[in-house]
Image 1 (cartoon, one colour):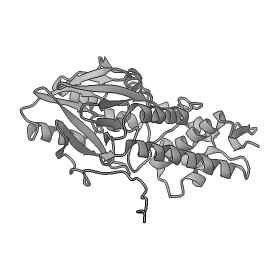
Image 2 (image 1 turned 30 degrees about the horizontal axis):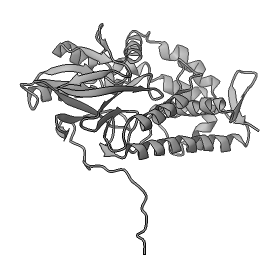
Image 3 (image 1 turned 120 degrees about the horizontal axis):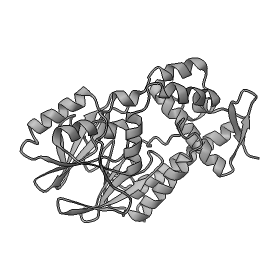
Image 4 (image 1 turned 90 degrees about the horizontal axis):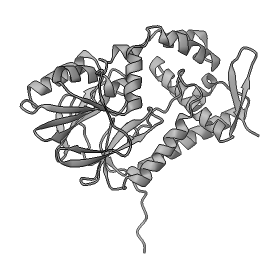
Length: 349
């Protein structure tokens, strides 16, 4: 009699996260710090990697007073006596780069960052205050969002400028294929797009550690969006290619240290799940658009069943367009445009 086969599952070696502002050793010479976020996704994972007599910092937390206070308390308390050596930021999103300027200024840190992520951070830092209204209003309206909802989304203003402390005027570029020596250990740099422009990830073969940033997270799907700045971007195709590359380049038995959620083992399984997740969303869009052409706004409730606030609506809208643009390249959808310039898509025959 044969034992029943069981489906493989992700393994979470540390079942509970540390409290906000408390460091926990997650691997030899690696500290895990969780910082709060003022969103539905209420936390960001920051990592400190032993670097000689100090700590290299991987990502920063959002640029708000609460996160600054946590850093100050740590540096005056548990981390006192060991300096910060360098600041590595994976990508431009404010929960990852938000305190880069503040940390760099206060602790004389050099910023290490992929060039597209740094330059985009710099561009947003100096963006005019009316950037949102000038670019996002026609973008939302063209894709079917009503005037009231559009104005509610725009009322948030240029949120990025309110939750970041800028980036230094100089930096050190990291790029795919680089090898970083951090505390005598070799870390390979990988980059991937879709969620961001050229998000950096670090892989330490010696210790089987993979710092995945937001590219691979255990229980949520990273946001893959199209924005008003590049409305025809094929972000989902880029993201899926990145996942396929990671599956080939990184062994299955690494410990994954993500930007959100818990550390986990089972990288290849999670990559397969994420690919299947996006295939499922494409299937929902295809099914809905068989009934007739639909705008992005009309497609949102077919894919996102739950109620969404303004913050989530913006993400959902961008996600729909990422899937639509991907499906257009696959020949699965056809574009229609009415006399007012609104775009709709229907399933290809």
